[in-house]
Each structure stands twice: as structure tokens, then as C-alpha cells.
Length: 215
Length: 215
Image (cartoon, rainbow over all chains, first blue to last red; front, side):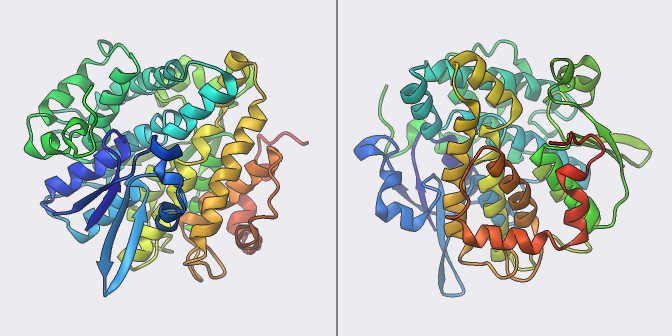
């Protein structure tokens, strides 16, 4: 498998964790979201992914090259094809909660801080794009902290690492970048600390990727 | 089951279509997103859904009242509990494509035009919030028109109505509201026309809801 991604892209990061947890090897092709006007906007990458987003997962299925984008779609696909270890809980209600928590990041926070949106806010509105991102992070994390109370154990859903943790950890990294004070979210940061003890999360960390730029 | 929603909320609309297609009866509780400073911001509704979003689906499971938000989480839950008729294709690759198309709306377009974001853009940036919404609609629909070519039949994925159609139809309604020219998206509008022939889509239409406000 080949993963097109960017070190600091939270959506790519989610997929890296899943691949690591499931023990699936992959090659990594960096797509620099800022260089050359954004390499995701090149004709070559548009042919890979018309959405011009990362990640894209490329793999063979029945001799055909398949390319899949959208981190949630990729995670669900990996879960179906490589079910062990499971990253969704066993019960339908717990699975539903897990997807709800995940989507509260996936559709509730991240879209408002992705590169193209932040560039638009800065350029078109001459506004502080980091403050914009911080606003939606704080709002979304406040809801997530409240919602996770119902299910949290060591991880977001009890004692099992699940999709929800894969969405949480990269999001908190982003929130810190935008200057969000994380003290109102003690459950979320506690879960993050637990996840960061796991090798699969450690290896997936933005700062450890080949295209990472030292601070 | 009880569905908290708003007539013109595209996320609520997706769930209405699914409930109708699966023949699941429900009561509808309107949450007016604009009245009284937004009824979703009331303490009563926050207790139902800390995200302050619609829809929320309320139901009983094993004698316990369950509340689920995030339209994609709700759709996946309905699909697991009420699998007939299936709204996800049978093959893993086709399911993955279906989720990818759905997420390109769910996380790629809708979050940038939801009520709270548009209100923020208008108030904080003194900007034209409809032009902001139109920009992201046009960008996302351009990618969706390209992606859907690979799988489109009568519907987004061949001849089977799927999640992707549930995301598409309400999104095109929104795009028109924001003044997006839909002529560059002939495949998407052709699929929309096919969907609108189905009673489940007709009954779910925004304009047919009890809380709809005539134009």
C-alpha cells in the first residue's frame, strides 16, 4: 500500500495510526501542502485525487489499482478488510458512539482548519486564520469533552483503542498549534497521554514523519 | 424513534431519507436554528446534544434512551440495525467509494456552510456568508462530479440508492440557495432528478417538513 500524505495533516495522521495498529506496511509519499503553490493542486496529484486533499491510500485489489481518499472512508475500508485488531467496538451502540465522536472531529472541527480554508480566511478576509481555527477547535473540543464522559475509560471508548482515539490525538496537536488552552479538556488530554504510550501512535506522530520540518 | 431536526438542515434531511427508505416511522421535533438566538443553543437542547447540532436521533435500546448525533454515525447505525433495504453497496471497494463520496460532502462541503459558520463569517469578518458558502460548494461539487464518473449509473453507485445519494440531494438544494451555477455538474443533477422520483426522497424534502417556511 502507498499512502499519499503530509506530516502535519491530521487526516493523514489518523490513517497512519490505523495502518500501524493493524500491522499493515506501507510506503509514504509526501505531498507538500504549502510548497509550489501546494503540491496537492498539481495536475499529477489531481489525477490521483480530484478533491486535492490528503490522505489518499493506493492499493491493489484483484489486480486493479485502487485509490481511496477521505480518512473516514479509508478507516472503514481498513476495518472491513483487516478486521484485527478491531478499531470499532463490538456492540452497535458503542460503534455508533465511536463514529459520533469521530465525526465530531472529522466534520465538526477539522474542515474549519484545513489548509485551503485557512488560506482563504487569511487572503480573502485579511483575518487571523489561526484565531479562526482556534475558535472552532475550542468549540468542538468543549462538546467532545462533554460527550466522551459517557464512554471514556483509558481510551475514548472504554479500554479499547478505537477510531475515536485516532481522531482525537492529531486534533489536540492541531489545537495546540493554534494556541487553544487545553486545560478545560482534562478527559481528552488524559486519553491522549494514554494513546501516546502505544508504539503505533508514537510512530505515526507528525514530528516523526520523513517530511517533517523541525520547529 | 424521534428525530430532532430542522427543515432546511441538509444533515437532518439525509437521515429523513434513510428513515423513509428503510420504512422506519419517527416523530419529528423541530429545532429552529435561527429563532430565539438558535434553539439548538438552549440548555434543554444542549442536554440532548452537546454539539448543538441537528440532527439528533433518539430511540430506545434495551430499555435505555439513546441519543445519537452526527448524520454519518446515524446512517451507519441505521444500516447495521435495519439492513434492509441496504444503503451501502455489497462489495468492500464499492462501499469504500460510497463512503468517500459521502464524506466529500459531509466533511468537505457542509461544514463550511453550516449555520454557525455562516453566522461567524458574516459577523466577525463582515463578509458575504452566502458567497463563502458558494465558494466551497462549487469547489466540492467540482471534485464530486469528477469522482462520481467512475461509479455512476442511475444513482451515484450504479443502480442502487446509497448513502452517497442521501448526501448529494440535500447538498444540491443548498448549492442553489447560495447561488451556485449547477450546469458544470450534469452527472450530479441527473442523479438528483432520478432520486427525486422516489417517494422516500419526496417525503424527506425540506419544503415538505412541518417546520418549513414558505419562500
